[in-house]
Length: 229
Image 1 (cartoon, rainbow, N blue to C red):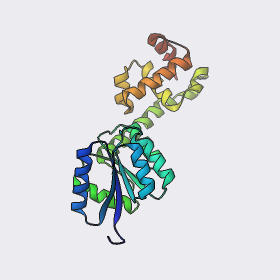
Image 2: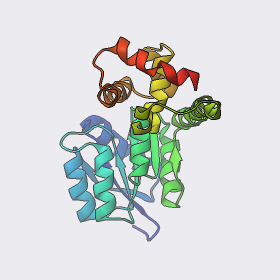
Image 3: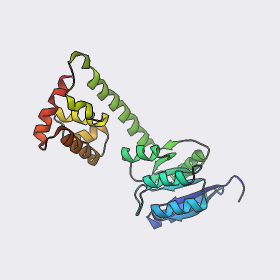
Image 4: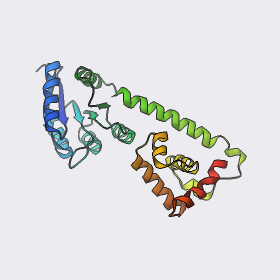
């Protein structure tokens, strides 16, 4: 092993996939060494602490501790280690949370092997990477948020004030509230905001609580004034 070798730790509960990935990576680049394989998040954290790899490659969904939360633990234990998420899930909530916790890359498992090797080298050199599919989703989401924000903020000066409860809502809850008031269902809101439907449901549940209503029809009626602002 030379001093330029990149030492990586792989973590995924799909045994056949992760063992095959090890063979593929090492066959494509002799300067990349897989120093360990973990089959759940807890084991990944322990092995990262013991082996101190240059890069840890994590799946999002693993037993015991999921990959996103493992990122935070590994970064706390070994701040110099770089982390790449390699997963089938392109959910934007996973992406944002993983990057916020310190991941340097977010790639999908359908990536070509050589591109993965190139990504490992790029991340080792200090680049932050994500798959084209995810990058396009995030860009589209940013555009959507900007447009929605412009619509929400376009006429506030013409109104006397927002309802008192409006100021208790988070930014995302305000976006959901406007779309609810427009009559969109959960699926339509999910597509418009590029959010998982479960995330939309969580925001709506929060709206029920903050606006003190239990019926969707009553909730929408209470939100209608937002369309006038």
